[in-house]
Length: 419
Image (cartoon, rainbow, N blue to C red; front, side):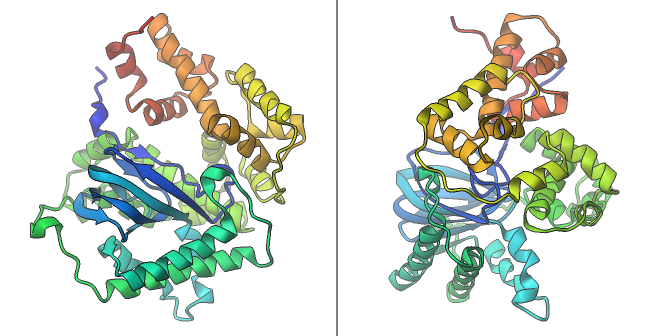
């Protein structure tokens, strides 16, 4: 019998900094939240600078107050929940690729100790800024905004010389400022109370940081003083993924970065992310991404083209094509070839029309159609998955959980169709 409580699942956010350009090292945006959020697991690092409002946030089981001039640092595979909203929260969101920065540490420290400065952000993820500190942080973030644009506006600033290097150094400047502020302040718990800490969320961070090795459930059991079955159950309850599938998800995330930002051979990539060899990497990557590693690298290392408000009919043609073909084995390469357009323009066209990029729209259409079939037919779930375009049940189930926060089986048994 399949049982999964929807409140136990955490949504795993996408591994990309930008929704329209997967190559971007950093994105800037502004968000507004007026109610509690569901738990999220983040695959990319981010800073949140709160501009107004009052509330509380839980990070990896620890509770913190947030208000105007609070700065929050979230690291890969942290779990966050905004629990209480006393006044609507308005904040700047800066998402950045910390793994890429880690790969550049040799340029900044000949002793290879540069990224020890990440530890203060892990230990002190929330700090309250003085007015002078807020001016410094805001100034750095505005510099980044001018360079990368605002994500929700889908704008692409005119390309400047050494733009990538400029962004990297600005992010490093922001991290250094954060660490120096941490060194001056004494973090306090909400209302001065002591809370019982839950170490289990750090399981995800431990696996991710040791992904190149064969981290077994047995070794996790010894590190976290939990039984193997308890760890497996916790991972499944939180993410909806088995331990094996979670490890593969993390390895794919690392692989994407290395394919995008380096020219390493597939054998070298496989070794770094924990696959047995290049053949194993190709098999898993192609199944998960619906593109081979070579195809992915060819697309996302291609030269950028600035999006203009072109022929709006082209955007609608793209949308219409996806809507008519989403049950087929459709890939973004099909759109690139058919419409003679680069992948950034494909995503930005879709974001402009429906606020979803190609991958998001494809899964949205497929999962919604499968919901209808789950409630109106007696077809097996595996057959429904195939009929809406998924070539394996794992990919279907993972995306169903991500969008509906429950398994297909739970949905079929507990949800009724409203005419």
